[in-house]
Image 1 (cartoon, rainbow, N blue to C red):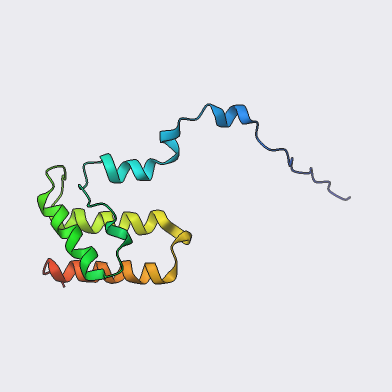
Image 2 (image 1 turned 30 degrees about the vertical axis):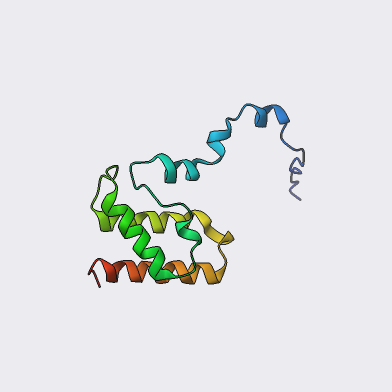
Length: 113
């Protein structure tokens, strides 16, 4: 006795479902970096090419921020990890390598080797 399988529907979702969404819901990760109680980041910190400069900027932001709840080291490292995780597969290998090196440099600058 052969089993029959139903074909999956290939219809696209209606535009009404998409139209009901708020714009802010689409970029929640951007809102987190701007409005959360994590850090007050300098503009373009993750776009820099030098891991030492990225780490220094995160350290400076973490130490001067009045919005963070945890310690400076923990806040800086979590923001860097958050950025790497949110970029996911879209992050080129060279950028990932630079940001991972920034993690190591951040540990070094905070004396947590």
